[in-house]
Image 1 (cartoon, each protein chain N blue to C red):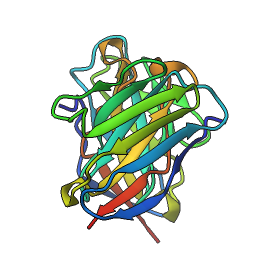
Image 2: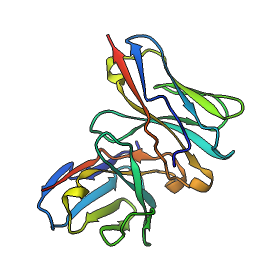
Image 3: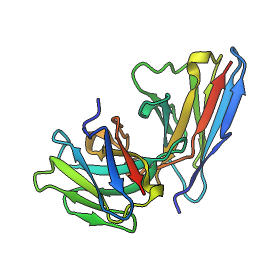
Image 4: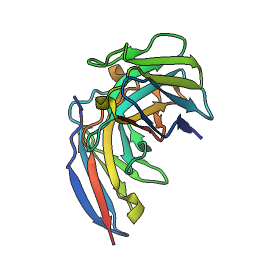
Amino acid sequence: GAVVSQHPSWVICKSGTSVKIECRSLDFQATTMFWYRQFPKQSLMLMATSNEGSKATYEQGVEKDKFLINHASLTLSTLTVTSAHPEDSSFYICSASPQGGWGTQYFGPGTRLLVL
Amino acid sequence: DAKTTQPPSMDCAEGRAANLPCNHSTISGNEYVYWYRQIHSQGPQYIIHGLKNNETNEMASLIITEDRKSSTLILPHATLRDTAVYYCTSSGGTSYGKLTFGQGTILTVHP
């Protein structure tokens, strides 16, 4: 149990385009999901907390207008990177918990984004 | 900033126990200690967590010192597939479910 999926697993796009990444909890409902970003040879950095039915909470330094988060259902959160630029190339990972925001977080497999 | 510190790298022989230390002297009394590992190009995998007592599951054992300032993750019989980056982190209390990751320990298991 506690499986989290992401789609796509990797994406290549041109600079200036927008990219949507989906995060799904497959066998549980998730009122809260978290989005992380990881650059090569670095650790994971929390970007934002996604709350079902309400606005996401962004960490300091993360542009909310650039990284749009929508948590429209209890099993799906989406992260849209708008007007992507090469510096947005990174590994994006989401997490969720069957116990909501307080419980053990289970991570998706990640989405690798390359912006040309 | 991460509330935990770990050695940057460790080696272990296959079949031997791997003992990975973590210092978390600043976590609050109601924060859990969590361990995850990340194999190259994959999302982190949950290993184990604990609050005060030692814990064991099918993957590993977690030994937490009585003062909760440090802990040790034990992989009792390391295999080559255990080669990964191991992260010690904390969650709960005022941190809610958010996890703050430090640089972790690169564990290399060799034949």
